[in-house]
Image 1 (tube, rainbow, N blue to C red):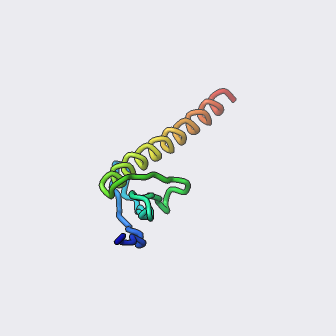
Image 2: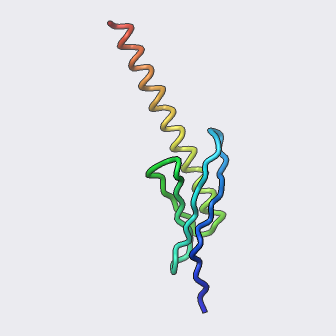
Image 3: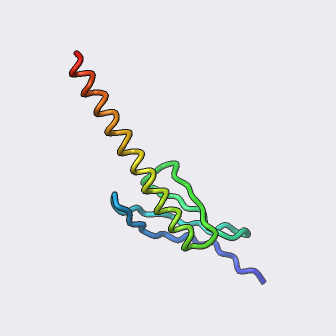
Length: 86
Protein backbone atom coordinates (compact mmCIF):
# COMPACT_ATOMS: atom_id res chain seq x y z
CA UNK A 1 0.00 0.00 0.00
CA UNK A 2 1.32 3.42 -0.99
CA UNK A 3 0.95 6.38 1.36
CA UNK A 4 -0.06 9.55 -0.46
CA UNK A 5 2.02 12.56 0.61
CA UNK A 6 -0.17 15.51 -0.28
CA UNK A 7 0.63 18.13 2.35
CA UNK A 8 3.08 20.87 1.51
CA UNK A 9 5.72 21.61 4.11
CA UNK A 10 6.74 25.21 4.86
CA UNK A 11 10.26 25.70 6.22
CA UNK A 12 12.24 28.90 6.79
CA UNK A 13 15.67 28.55 5.21
CA UNK A 14 18.39 30.78 6.72
CA UNK A 15 21.14 31.99 4.39
CA UNK A 16 23.79 34.70 4.75
CA UNK A 17 21.44 37.28 3.17
CA UNK A 18 18.47 36.62 5.47
CA UNK A 19 15.72 34.07 5.99
CA UNK A 20 13.40 32.81 3.26
CA UNK A 21 10.15 30.90 3.59
CA UNK A 22 10.21 27.88 1.28
CA UNK A 23 7.37 25.58 0.29
CA UNK A 24 8.31 21.92 -0.11
CA UNK A 25 5.76 20.10 -2.25
CA UNK A 26 5.94 16.31 -2.21
CA UNK A 27 6.08 14.83 -5.72
CA UNK A 28 3.40 12.16 -5.84
CA UNK A 29 3.68 9.38 -6.92
CA UNK A 30 7.36 10.07 -7.65
CA UNK A 31 9.84 10.47 -4.79
CA UNK A 32 11.24 13.84 -3.86
CA UNK A 33 10.20 17.41 -3.23
CA UNK A 34 9.77 20.44 -5.47
CA UNK A 35 10.76 23.64 -3.65
CA UNK A 36 9.58 27.21 -4.29
CA UNK A 37 9.94 30.44 -2.34
CA UNK A 38 7.17 33.07 -2.43
CA UNK A 39 9.74 35.85 -1.87
CA UNK A 40 11.69 34.90 -5.01
CA UNK A 41 9.33 34.52 -7.99
CA UNK A 42 10.59 31.99 -10.49
CA UNK A 43 12.80 30.18 -7.97
CA UNK A 44 12.30 26.40 -8.20
CA UNK A 45 14.53 23.54 -7.12
CA UNK A 46 14.21 19.84 -6.31
CA UNK A 47 15.58 17.21 -3.96
CA UNK A 48 15.12 13.44 -3.75
CA UNK A 49 14.76 13.67 0.05
CA UNK A 50 13.63 16.47 2.34
CA UNK A 51 17.23 16.98 3.53
CA UNK A 52 18.54 17.19 -0.04
CA UNK A 53 15.70 19.56 -0.99
CA UNK A 54 16.58 21.85 1.96
CA UNK A 55 20.24 21.86 0.92
CA UNK A 56 19.33 22.61 -2.70
CA UNK A 57 17.01 25.42 -1.56
CA UNK A 58 19.76 26.96 0.60
CA UNK A 59 22.33 26.80 -2.22
CA UNK A 60 19.88 28.08 -4.82
CA UNK A 61 18.69 31.00 -2.68
CA UNK A 62 22.27 32.03 -1.90
CA UNK A 63 23.14 31.97 -5.59
CA UNK A 64 19.99 33.92 -6.48
CA UNK A 65 20.72 36.61 -3.86
CA UNK A 66 24.37 36.90 -4.90
CA UNK A 67 23.30 37.42 -8.52
CA UNK A 68 20.71 40.04 -7.51
CA UNK A 69 23.34 41.84 -5.41
CA UNK A 70 25.91 41.80 -8.21
CA UNK A 71 23.33 43.00 -10.72
CA UNK A 72 22.38 45.88 -8.39
CA UNK A 73 26.03 46.82 -7.75
CA UNK A 74 26.79 46.67 -11.46
CA UNK A 75 23.83 48.93 -12.28
CA UNK A 76 24.95 51.41 -9.61
CA UNK A 77 28.50 51.49 -10.97
CA UNK A 78 27.26 52.03 -14.53
CA UNK A 79 25.06 54.94 -13.45
CA UNK A 80 27.97 56.47 -11.51
CA UNK A 81 30.18 56.21 -14.58
CA UNK A 82 27.52 57.92 -16.67
CA UNK A 83 27.31 60.78 -14.20
CA UNK A 84 31.10 61.15 -14.09
CA UNK A 85 31.31 61.27 -17.89
CA UNK A 86 28.48 63.76 -18.27
